[in-house]
Amino acid sequence: MDLRQAERLISDLLGGRISQAEAVAALSRLPAAELPDATIDLDRRRRCGFPEVVFGESKSVPTLLGIFERLLAAGQPVLATRISVDKGAAIVREFPAARYSELARTIRIEPEGSPLPAKVGKVAIVTAGTSDIPVAEEVRETADWMGAHTDLIVDVGVAGPQRLLAQLPRIITADAVVVVAGMEAALASVVGGHVPCPVIAVPTSIGYGANFGGLAALLGMLNSCAANVTVVNIDAGFKGGFVAGLIARRAGIGSGE
Image (cartoon, rainbow, N blue to C red; front, side, top):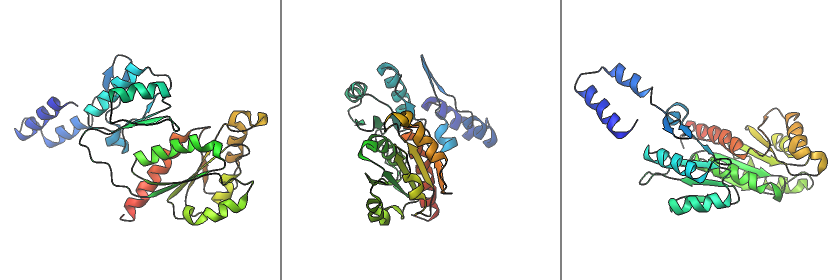
């Protein structure tokens, strides 16, 4: 719904030409924005709490720019994932206020003059190894964009269990924990056995041949005996961060933060 449509709807409501129920019904049918090669769901924030997130890996720069312009025109913040360095540089040239993370391969843009959401809840992000950090950064960028506090704890895999024990005071205070691990991915179960909150396990494609590009890590996490562990797809930092962000924000709001 653009500004003119909103003004017309308000005018009709105040002028008695439509009822309140009709106005609510019109708002519930907010149209999608049609672009030449994309259809943007501008109603998702109302339905689901957050705007549509853009998967940028196979989209051209002109397509991404068009999507971003339409989201920002509707007053909605932008988060795009899997943005290459070249695409990121081109986007920042067009949107100087954009925040590009080369490590996470994400780009974020806030509507001009729009206040950032107050931070509520906490997501702890734990990596088994240093090689898992790029996926963990995608987790962090996503949860931060959603307005959750984040705490990244790296390189505490099961090969050196004393490292995890030293970091437990930071982890157990979280509303949700995201464990990012490749190889055999045993860290998710170990963390799950120490914390009183949901653990979202993100398997990564890090590992040698029998890791099968992350399949071994995925199967290991799916077979976790820790009851509070759930699993997302291989290298799916965005999905892990989004689920954790939802949990943390609801927990934070519910506790009156």
